[in-house]
Length: 323
Image 1: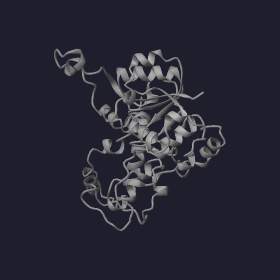
Image 2: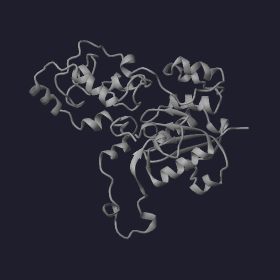
Image 3: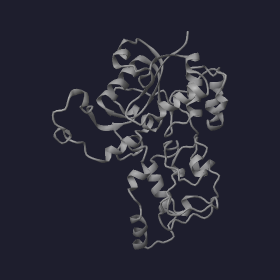
């Protein structure tokens, strides 16, 4: 009997659901391996359809929890699913919608738009945007596929491991180069991934980045459009805010390879406590000057430091705002 699966998105851009479509049409037809029971994006499924479903084997959940309907759907899916998988930075860490937490929640009066027809009314907003595992009614998330959006190869690794049992034609080796060996071995043997598995690497992006690391000296903050050397030198050493030192590997250095600083969409590596604190420490330790006025001048050049360092992870990995 084929596993019964659901593919859903809460508050987000739906790019991760598009990744699921890329798998369906580009790698292996999902309906060969699974019975898709609930997929609003493609099938037009409604909450009433979900309520009628008794059991699901796997749910691939993308998007952040920002509205009451997001929360209700997530809690219902947790009850009905054996395995709940957070796909993409929004579901895993809160993503860019989570930056809303930097503002105080709007009051009902402030959010009132007057007498609108019911079909035009805004959805009920949560006081805070949360990652999937930050919802009180969800006791666990069984696996995470990070990224913004989650890449096809790592999503396929999760589908292959959790739905296909590693037996699909396009096997998990399609993504094995990006996964820790400790995860790949049990999956290929048919045992499946360990509880709470993150389908990505374990080190920081810097560990696999091909750029040349020389003597780190941070002299001034630069935006990507302002200056870029084609020398292959470390972007952080050039003054660009590259978060590779505080971000989990697994992407293959796609951004840094073409001169775009890492933005942190894979979340922090296991050895890092707080990605923002790690970035502050890494940058400040390389200042060429020890004069307070000059240090302050460099710091003043940062644009939205909090929004930059926690662009994808504020609800889940900023220790001062987590909860």
